[in-house]
Length: 350
Ligand SMILES: *[C@@H]1O[C@H](CO)[C@@H](O)[C@H](O)[C@H]1NC(C)=O
Ligand SMILES: *[C@@H]1O[C@H](CO)[C@@H](O)[C@H](O)[C@H]1NC(C)=O
Ligand SMILES: *[C@@H]1O[C@H](CO)[C@@H](O)[C@H](O)[C@H]1NC(C)=O
Ligand SMILES: *[C@@H]1O[C@H](CO)[C@@H](O)[C@H](O)[C@H]1NC(C)=O
Image (cartoon, rainbow, N blue to C red; front, side, top):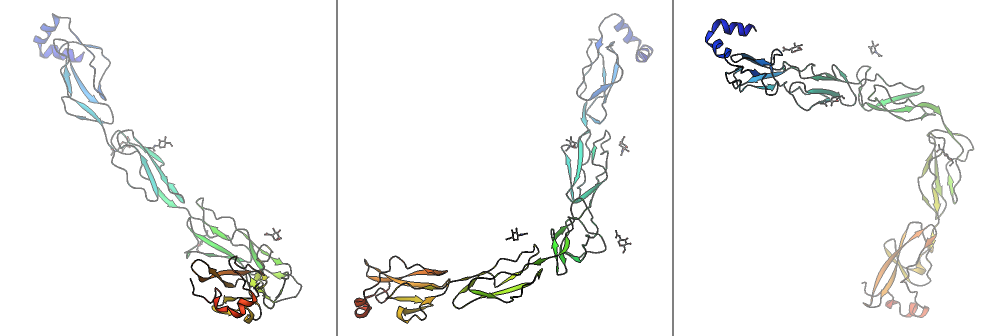
């Protein structure tokens, strides 16, 4: 109304035109984010309206005023209101920044990597004046303090520790002074929650007297309890071969480590023939004693009838059993004594 009054005072000509007509402008339809003051619905020709941008938006192009013309239409305005942009946020060391956009009202979230604690704001929003509502927070490493030590025990850290704080991810191994053994997990770690993994206990551990092995002997025959980490050695009699570990150790669970065993030698089950043994060709009657040891490899000779040549076929002694290859043919006494040069072991090798 003030405006109309002003028009009346300044421009009498204007009044004369409008007074003769009923034409008015209805409230203008405006582009996105453009605002006008007041709630007035109809305007007389000559009325001027100031356009502005809604908050968080910046005006581009112009003009920023429109006028109601005599024909009841508003003059054109190319005014556009574009949302304000916040600056790209700073990088967050040891954490992540999440945002989809940097326009007015965009949300921004911050998280820290595992083992880091966030100090500051967790989230923020791009404000009307183009600034973020919160500063980028800090991600500080979690700290655990020194690991608790069990009685009769100690911890060996995998890295040198300075002072009395340890950071997330620091690891170590617990040891107990014998005869105490670590009961629980020997490995320790400063976890993401700032606490150490469970502390094991150091307990006295004993093992029962160790057992005997067939065809063998042990280094100690005393019937007593053995301490944690104590060891007993084993050996085999004669031609028996020890398989497994040479000694057993009293373990932290009060059991012995796995016992070895003594494996039997094998006899070579042929009467006549020549074998390849320990890199030499040996006539079987010259093999003394007439046996090979567990795990040893022996080759026998077979004949390739088609090509008329001889080839070696290997077999292995396994705990008293030596399988003679199926292709081996034992010669008769006559051919063995009189025609030994025709045996597969003597003819041209394949
Ligand atoms: C920020 O976190 C809120 C709540 O967890 C979620 O709704 C929003 O989508 C997140 N915003 C972004 C940009 O990740
Ligand atoms: C931006 O707006 C916020 C909230 O109104 C205010 O706290 C802050 O000081 C403003 N920043 C600038 C640079 O004007
Ligand atoms: C860490 O060591 C300092 C200096 O030796 C001592 O004053 C402080 O109490 C210790 N803090 C903890 C948690 O043990
Ligand atoms: C110790 O050995 C016994 C007998 O072999 C077995 O039953 C037991 O589970 C073992 N104990 C542990 C802790 O391994």
